[in-house]
Length: 312
Length: 285
Image 1 (cartoon, rainbow over the protein chains, first blue to last red):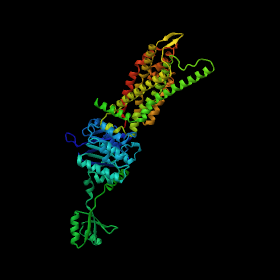
Image 2: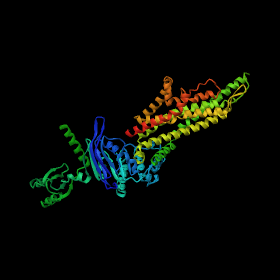
Image 3: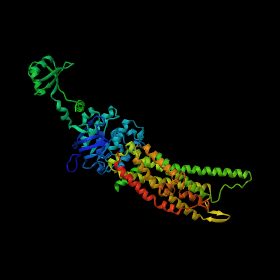
Image 4: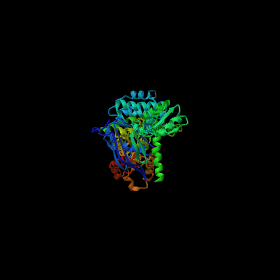
């Protein structure tokens, strides 16, 4: 879902936000493409929730521009339910039952596309429909929050820590639901979370928020594919392979504890390496390109900036 | 306007599905019914004892006394309604903000201002319903336990029933006029406060403090809407009506206070609402 003039659904420019003397956001820029599942990661206190709150008009900001589906944060109510948010804490009336919450959401929704029964079934909370929200477990409260958001037909969903309090099955359900909504209905997502492995699995794009700015933002495949020059090689004679790689200056090879060879390739690709080693008479049982995980990338960025801070 | 209607529907939905709040609003009627029953029981006990001692004849009804007890019942009930409404109005916005329930409607459909006005009007409707129930219950209890009639002394009708009724209506009007202002005050506190507990304690504390201090403020108290609300240290016109309908002729009516009571709550209501609407735009939710 993009705006009528084809602009990206969310554009944040030079966003500044301070709490007293502490400047949490220091010129944040972020653009989210239509149909993306965009992850926003950062350390505790890095400003992820503040960013979402500013985008949703729940708190003011010092300066900058935000346009969500073409609406400024103060005008979001005019988007008539095309934007919904699911928060870290279950933001539902604790005294209402699940069904009453969903009836209330239906009342608020301009064009409901699902009935309360349908969303209860979708989230697997049908048997809790007569339970009051305050009596539900944290995981089921979260399911109820998501159900509440899905009564309408949102084109843009913001989720703040969507996996908190969910068991393994619940996480899988939420991941599957996000993927399904994105694929079938073209819903754009912005997910803020600490659960990096989950984000890595579903996010098409990723932004790393550090020191009040977006330190890195790109397609997940591009971000994590930047380390494709590293391969793990399982062969019958690792020391011979190491020698060949060194002599022919193919890169730097190191024998691992498990007997495999970790190779940092210089100018060649994994396929060429395979060819050279096989031609030298080695039997290659496995050659696996090493992708950098989001977790290592995240810690590389945050720790390098920390050391930069220490030095600077 | 459509957005405001949605806000109102949303708030009425929440009120309809909150049995705790409904019970709270019914509480004044229950307490007044109990109060009047206890008074009647005590009177009957006294009359039986006097009759046994030969002091008087047993007469379970006191002719024309019902209006006095009716007004007493209304005063007690309205005092409770005042305390309940100020608590509920302080609670409403602050609670929804604390539990985060305010966020979904705000993002989905309703602006902050309309949400606040929706809450305010819902509380006005809830208060009006509570007062209507209180009026009916008090009327029924008074008519069941005593007889309605004019004030008669030595066979001479001092105050006719029509005069009594018009005084009660005026007393009620003057007591009810500041109630929306009280709700706007509670709502303002709800917006300002950092938590639900703080909002409720602040609103109740200020209401009770104003009740105590209004006597020391002298004429200045006439410019504060709190002075016209039925309260624990009651200075409202309804208290005077309670005396009038019992035939007391030495009740001093301050005409200026009555006039201020009629007109002052409205600008104060507008002022408090505008401040609340301004502050809610700035508030982190």
